[in-house]
Image (cartoon, rainbow, N blue to C red; front, side, top):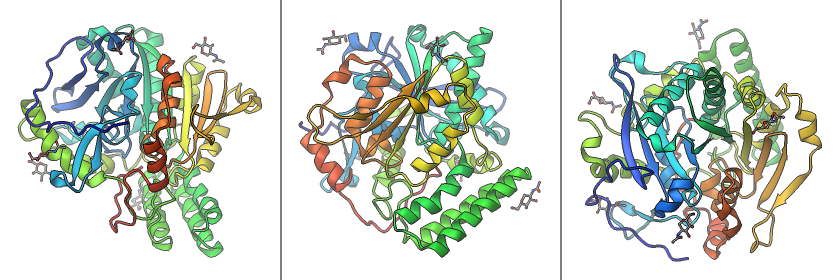
Length: 455
Ligand SMILES: *[C@@H]1O[C@H](CO)[C@@H](O)[C@H](O)[C@H]1NC(C)=O
Ligand SMILES: *[C@@H]1O[C@H](CO)[C@@H](O)[C@H](O)[C@H]1NC(C)=O
Ligand SMILES: *[C@@H]1O[C@H](CO)[C@@H](O)[C@H](O)[C@H]1NC(C)=O
Ligand SMILES: *[C@@H]1O[C@H](CO)[C@@H](O)[C@H](O)[C@H]1NC(C)=O
Ligand SMILES: *[C@@H]1O[C@H](CO)[C@@H](O)[C@H](O)[C@H]1NC(C)=O
């Protein structure tokens, strides 16, 4: 595979709204009184014929407060931001081999309001709980489909990551309800919850056993870690979500301290291993310039993102298990995917909350066969998949929290299979993929900075 360094974006014009656009950026008002507006990006395949028949995939990033353009440029979009010692600023864009635009029109939304390029002029414009986020997203989708009418019957999926997992659970349940009431018309197929923060308390309890097995803590430290989980649980049970979030923060600090900054998103690394900082610079400079007047005067990248997390502090630790069940009950597909070496939402956490799904087909799911995933030119299994009655669990090997960043070919295989893409059969693992998975996605180790963007 050859990597083509693309021409600088600055000079290229923003594509005007057209049907099934290859590239489009815009704002959709959420609340006029507060001047609250959602920013969104549509990214598609270069094949216009393909775009007309491709499904629409909304991607929601986590935090809360992390831009969905993280997924566009570092995980799934047609252009990949890479570290480059020879490029200005130390970063460059190249074509992404395993782009999800090979199989879908991607829709990246900066959500909730205040995230990335989305903004509000009023403190009341910020969301303070997951139901509010879900209702705002239903409103966004209604308005989006009224503008981009060509997607009226297009199969619609929601993929996500991290805190996006909880927001997608709430959104999926709210969307199913809105469809049942007839207040929105959309060809909703289902969701794929990626390393989702669906039950935060389960995650807090999962760290001690995970870190012990991974030889990162001793028994005394494990005990301390579990104690903080119980403090958070008590606070939540007493109705003090903010205090529960504080205990989560304390537990995170303690774990980082005793593990010498084990990376929260991939436990094979310490400190940061991504191009997070370069992405922030790229979005605040090149990308902002490229969009020109699309971004209103006074609005800047990530200006309100810390506020987004703060306003959600009381809801951050609440779970979304019932909402996942509601999506299944309404007859939509639920996929759950998780990276093998994710720490922040590790496999034990995912297994713990899935067991709490009070869903009549859960036993049938556990009794169903579990199959290895293997691309035709790979020697080893890339993960495992198990599926029954519209619930599918994907365990992806050689990946942490950011599954498509760490394991691009198997993330693409999973995504293409979920949306029913004919292109799924053509996916191959390249020599470059194999090298990247040996060395890490950016061939960078132990840069002594720790990037952290919530979950
Ligand atoms: C473009 O997409 C259409 C529909 O999927 C396909 O039939 C056609 O072969 C594609 N063209 C190219 C050049 O890949
Ligand atoms: C970003 O902008 C700088 C300054 O104009 C330019 O030199 C560089 O090539 C751009 N990088 C990308 C990836 O667009
Ligand atoms: C919740 O706990 C915090 C301490 O973390 C405290 O300041 C606050 O008063 C508590 N709120 C309620 C409603 O008890
Ligand atoms: C956001 O922008 C406003 C107005 O330009 C400015 O006063 C404020 O300091 C900015 N906040 C951050 C976090 O950059
Ligand atoms: C699975 O989904 C289909 C529609 O996609 C629905 O008809 C069926 O009832 C669902 N099955 C269960 C067990 O919910």
